[in-house]
Length: 340
Ligand code: SF4
Image (cartoon, rainbow, N blue to C red; front, top):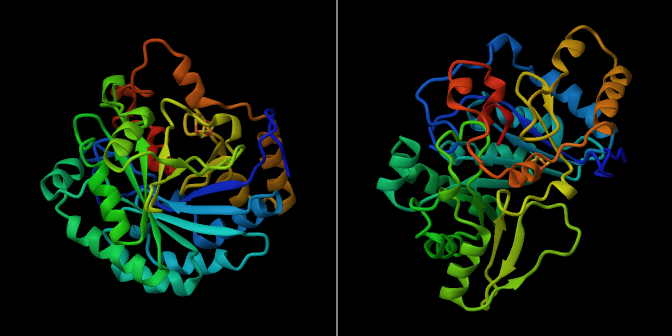
């Protein structure tokens, strides 16, 4: 186990396989068009697999495939197959918006993908279209139904924005129950493309618990102390479980063992990090696994990032990256490039 400067182990890797997406959610990719990563910079699956080997050798045992929308990358099941059977890997998951999931679910399962999380913020067709700019709610429902059928259960992530979908918590829990999905409510964050973020639009964990317990009665906390999982889990009286990810009002940086590798091989130690470490360059220049492991270990042992906690300490809080710095500039500043 390699500890960083706060004693946090290198364990959890989010692997972005593309910066492209087929939706335009207002808290992530609100613009029509972006500067995309140059195609020639995007890692080939063999390169990704080689970097995964290095990370596994250093103690990473959980990997989540993300995007953009990961299922837009051609033949993701082939990458899953390359990674799933690697020694030392305990958990291989994928986060998707669900639009393309129905067609790929069987191949993903056959390739060895362990778990699925689908992002879904609203059950209302008009609101889905307004939030994402695409009329794809039915496709997402089909994807969720397929995941429930093939995997037996799934997670459903819902970003809750005050004044937008904060009236849907109860409906989302009921929906999750009906599809064997555990819903996790996520506080609206001020990272990357969230340039319409403001403190007044955050619907907090306290707000969420008040709404849920008002409708269903007291909720029972289930998360063991010291857990590094971002979601705090709760159970309703009937046994239905749900989670809350209070990344804005109660950040969990102190136990954060997550890092992110972009599709073009830049490694970020924090969602809020200004810069990452380029691993593609050394890899393509012929660096050995030992060289790469040393680069990664050196960077991790110097890590003291606590981005979300530092944001809380700010008095006057605004979107992390001003709109003029995002538009048509470095794609690495965008949350969709960093894998959310
Ligand atoms: S802000 Fe950075 S350190 Fe804190 S939980 Fe998120 S990724 Fe981890």
